[in-house]
Length: 92
Image 1: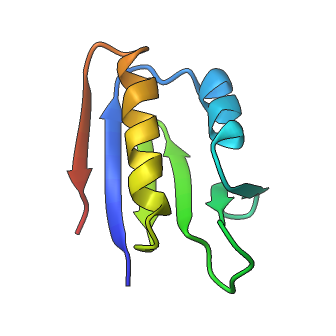
Image 2: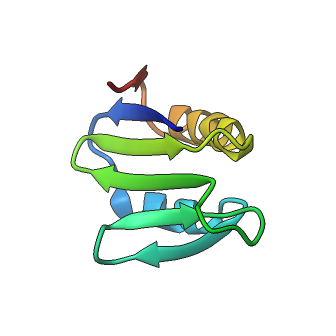
């Protein structure tokens, strides 16, 4: 089970955002095939969080282990320091 969130904001600066994503807690790897940032707190079969950048924002999949809530808070803090307005919504 997972919850998908979308963070929308104007003119994302992907270079600095990519570096920030790689520095977030529990970063494991970047998968080029799926353009996904994978976060895993412990050695488990499945990730705790998966983040994908797109041209108007970020998609975050939270696998409900607690790490997703932490990452949502970190992203909101980071993004609101750069962009005037962001929108966070749960995706269907």
